[in-house]
Image (cartoon, rainbow, N blue to C red; front, top):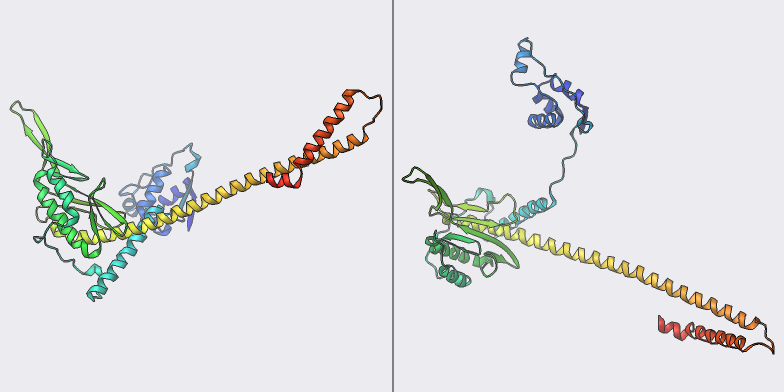
Length: 368
């Protein structure tokens, strides 16, 4: 329900009833009502005002100042809320669907009826495994990159310190082996690293965080430098909403202990990406169909205009045929007529023959 007031009316309300009670009547929060008053330049009672009133003491009332902006003179409270961004709404819905789908698949494979939210994900350790075939080229490239003077290297959004190369390869190898039964494969040949499944691809990045270190020179100057701290961070660039996508080493926990969570999040993000790709394909086909319809409509108009022009030309030619026939038939003749007169009539007959030929059925059919 929408409540509409003038500034003066709302001013009288907020100074006669505590804003918490007033907001409750409107079905909004007291903070929300206070923001509405601020936008419309309506002063509200300060802290301690109502305590003084209840104690029977006098309290100063801030006057409502006059404004010259009619756009904020009327105050509307409540009413329909603005729609959520359609892209965000789609991502939220797709995430919810992906979670439900993966939970059903997991329950069917484990035979468990316990909701996924109450089950603890098992921590996947990183055993010694042969390097996954999908990682061979990328691991070779990562190991051959020359680091800069700080020890940093960057290969398709794997931006790490050279001392972390072995650990990163081991982490990706563990993920690749865990993803393999799910049909998810590593892709490291594009512009960014990713894991993909059934045509859907979700990028990720691995970084080595830094911290700012302050040192003092012998001359008393302070120097600031960002140095690596020996940690790793893993981030998924997915479209899912409300799903964890970032993991960073801490003193108590390494990102390797969160592999099962990474797998869970990746599965959801890939399902959301599939839904997004499907929606995008449908939207592209819809746009192409509409464009085709617009093109057909344009061609239809052009065809009708061409037909009309063609018919008008025929009509003009037939009118001229009729005029020439009447003229040739009715023009006066004389034995003493000049040669120029005969030549004019001969030209008229020639013109008539041309028009007759041009408007014959055969010529019209050929022109069409």
